[in-house]
Image (cartoon, rainbow over all chains, first blue to last red; front, side, top):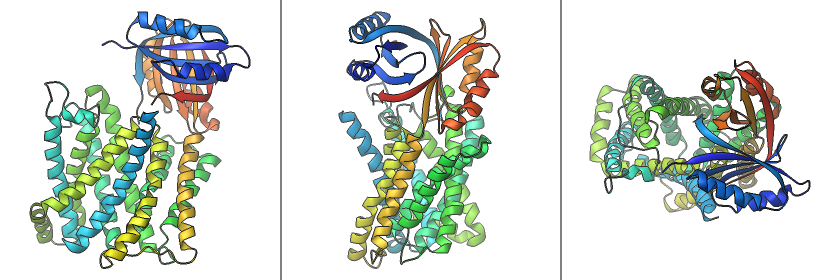
Length: 83
Length: 408
């Protein structure tokens, strides 16, 4: 079973951050939703089994009202630090 | 939502089992093996046997797939023999554990009140933070000093008994017990870091090997205090009284398993905070036991203001640990790298303290780094300064996390 991890960077309409933040929590496969300050308003970490599933998930995210722009960054390799 | 409750239950249970272990230790020491060194040696060796049996049972594979132990720790793949650096770090761990056990056994023999001893186990977090600061050569910030003091004062209040703090027991706790547990934790963490890539980092094997080293080192430590004959008798007792001793050590094993499972589901600081509050359980339990078996357990004193002091103490410990968790800063750093440097940067960034994970990504940026640090004032010195010194970085963006939701 291959696992694909991706980051989706989201910009939302002013005043709708909290609403989008809540809506994202209900989507399956989403590991982490962070409200951020800087270039993006929300960063989502998502785990899926195929690129097709990633496409479906991003489609679902696009349906959330209040979104302005998204940027999907697919992870190729990852290293974790422990301890 | 149900997983969240499981997380809280596991964290609380791990603390509860720690209190239970102290209760059983004191029971055996006053009813079965009355001599302190005989008890210490025999319980450690009985622990080695029972952990070895557990290790064998947990290595069995069900349906030719995963070994049984992988239910307890997903990293478990079967028994291994530590080599190289892992061996030395587990040896250090075992040494630390032997030192802290020595202090602990002396402590339970002078203060047979589990509710006064259990709180001290939460002090190790103070030492871990101080240890981190020494290793990373960083100055503590005001908030860190504040939280450490809150925990320290809280622990002192909880352990109040008979209106005073016994100076010898306080010395034992601040000295050998916690310095030993710091070394134990440090060794485990280093071994885990190195073992990860070799598939040798599960807590079940780690526990067995460090316990074996503890059981080997401990007799050497106490040799100046006793006779060789007693150590040999302790070994003999570990077989004669195997059943009660093994039950005692099984409790510690489960305390550890619950702790590890909880760690896999949430933040370490929350797990520590929760398990430290379960000290509350040890108070009524000790009170009940001391009424039922007054010859074994000492009645925790609740007279006058003491009960309030202890409750204030428990609250302070909880607050201090939670405050450490809440003052933590999380952020993402997006990095654009010069061509040809990406893989090298992945390895270099991974080594920076505070980095949780690094991912190479396709798209507008080349790397995304997730960092965690205890306070804002350390972001520049600890993380940014180290990243910009690396060769091959073209540009970077810092994105602070303001609020977060995680599926657990």
